Image (cartoon, rainbow, N blue to C red; front, side, top):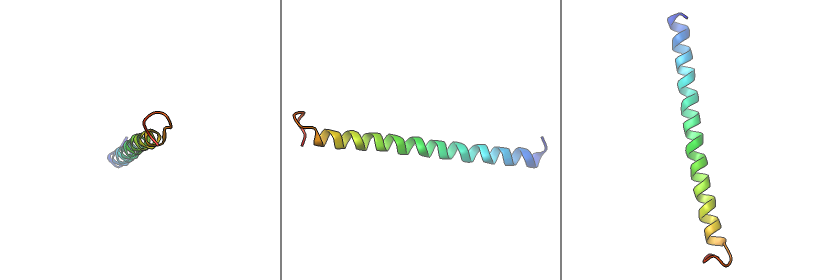
Length: 48
């Protein structure tokens, strides 16, 4: 693999990692938000 191809591949891998990390962060935030919403709207469980 020449340097240009290696650089391109590395940049692509880095971009995929960044998107994967961002997706995981968003998923975790959504999970927490849904949990908070469910807690606030649970009938008979101290919420809603």
